[in-house]
Image 1 (tube, rainbow, N blue to C red):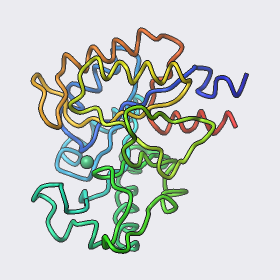
Image 2: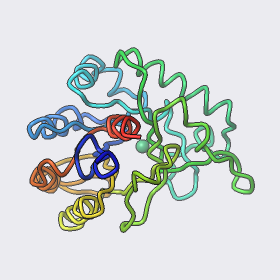
Image 3: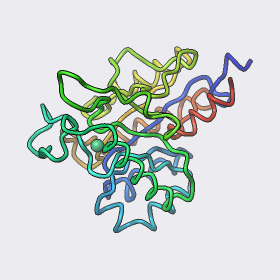
Image 4: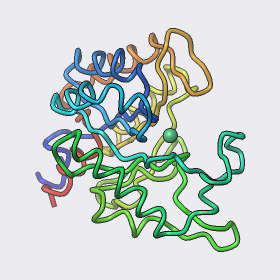
Length: 249
Ligand SMILES: [Zn+2]
């Protein structure tokens, strides 16, 4: 029985994750999740929205959402990311002690806001290495025990997380931005069919869809589709699904 339902008694799991600490996460996403009894993971860099609305983020955490670590300064490898990645925040120029100091300080801040220390890491730009392209250093083994798990790099759309074959330092995620409602529903159905876990990554949610923004109508319909799976599906923050999987071992 334990092996057939590792997700706290549910058949499969979906974690809905939202990056970059935006106003819409507090104003629109968290209420939409809670209206259906769901909770999500918000990967929050230490930005103005986090600091200015700290009490509201703390309250969201107390209601069961996860504030995941998304670094302080959101470093990424400079190629393909646009010119917002200045040389000082280029992961190619980072070494491990600098990355560790940054994510550990972000954790100290999030610990104070959440009043707890267990959380997952949401890789910035889905990247899982630092240092020069010729000699990149993988981050997988530096995630634990600093974090309960790391969301990690992007998976192909037909890949889901098999609880029997977990890689907590790099779980793998599916990008939700820009997908149609049908495509998003298919990912959820895939998880249920297989008895697997998927972690979906979103950024903004707004009236109109954009490159890193999903339309509110699509988002609501996706949540309704998840709810329609009933008890088959655990819809929970990354740290909570990891805790269920760990206790099922
Ligand atoms: Zn981000």
